[in-house]
Amino acid sequence: MTRALIIIDVQNDFTEGGALPVTGGADVAAGISTFLAANAGQYGHIYASRDWHDADGDNGGHFAVDDAPDFTASWPVHCVADTAGAEYHPALTLPEATVHIQKGQGTPGYSIFEGVDSGGEKFGELLIAAGVTDVDVVGLATDFCVRASGLDALTHGQHVRVLTDLVAGVDSGASERALAELAHAGAVLATSDALAR
Ligand code: VGL
Image (cartoon, rainbow, N blue to C red; front, side, top):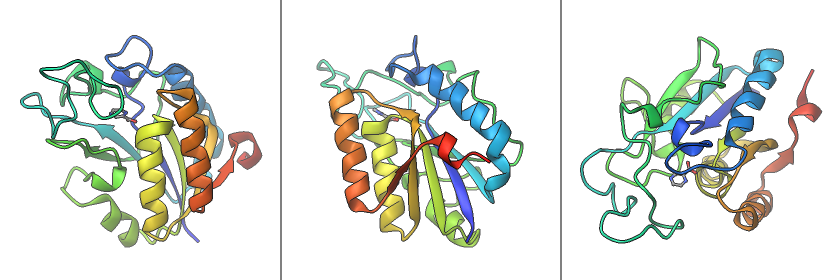
């Protein structure tokens, strides 16, 4: 069994003060850092994704350019590649060996499985090459990128746990439904203190 931690989109634009802020996002950044300081050794591999959208165009309808965003399928401009909003939140401290994944160049790119590493290798291929069988998922946002990434991980045959105290969502009702959907699809809902050693 090889377990990986997947840290989804803990970026400035998804935290308080950002372009598309998720309430509790900064706390999630700090909480993940605290968890990692004690528990990084539980993981064979650590992956962190970032939304990395194109500045030009609407990224496949993801950016509301002409109309107001509906905050479900269209969004304010956020996480444009190489901007401060696309950087990891400053409270997120990642181990040196973290593999960085970028996604959403020209597309909505909700799932980390749509992303690639710095060499252009697809995330799903990286997991297979690393022999990963189990993943723990944390980050932002519960109802969008955490949901999509967790469901894709299950589809890719991974054993999936979602650490529910280390995620935060755009909408509280939708986030509860996303966690229920993940559980129904086969994910285990756990809390970080229950896993801590
Ligand atoms: C996300 C809304 C729009 C996310 C990304 O990271 O969950 N949410 N784009």
